[in-house]
Length: 372
Image (tube, rainbow, N blue to C red; front, top):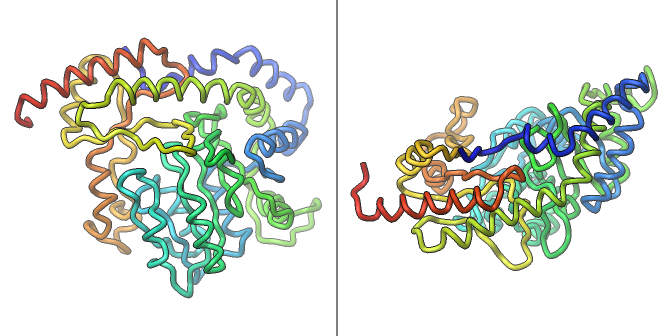
């Protein structure tokens, strides 16, 4: 069997180090906003090339708090991709603003800068590009647009730990970047966790207050904050895993290259690879008109696949009152055709070769047969 993702195997590589780090926290007697969080924040900020990092409870909170720290709230509009995980949209809604979807570039599947300008109105306050599947969005163009219109850029980098663009890490481009450390991410905790990175000291100070009940000193609450704090246990685990992230991302890149070379000529639409754009390869997503047939055949051979994402946010019940099916045809076209192949540092090159061989055989056979 080729597992889509095997967290037990991945975490097993650093099990002893994680156990020692957790034991250190237990022995310290300090479990919230202590030395582990401070040290992780410093180390992660350095990793992504930012001056400040603020650890929070999860990736959704990271986006919400980043928007609040930049003053986004009721009456404002925030431009978001039409195809993304719904958390990007929910964060905008939670702060009282309105998500304004923009369709993706059909090649990269990331938000299309050429379509953003037409969506900007007098109420637009921010652009929230998502580095979907680990591939950086077109930040030079998006930043230029934002500067022309006086907008804030909040990167949703939940899938892009270690990605870069023109040699500069994701997280160092926008005003602020938000991160998720959900267990399945390239840098994953043993539970929920998140962070915001920024070069703006004032924004960072506000974020530290917002995450901790709006307090910068005990029992003094200047802001209407929340309780969203990266805890010491998760920070200790993340520090261990951060030391392995570059190695693990290199393995992901090797698997991706094996797929790209091996699946060429199969008729599948493969992920975009462009000079100067370095994906973190959080996911390897192909597109095919015969997805369900291919997926079923792979499953029968013990090759696990997933769909990211089967239903676009505008077609979810949460936004049924605001949008209708058919409004964003590119996103809908993608949702019906995307298929994620096994990806992660748990895979060997032999695993990737097995996936390639199975897909080549199946696509060759499917070419000769009508759709079922």
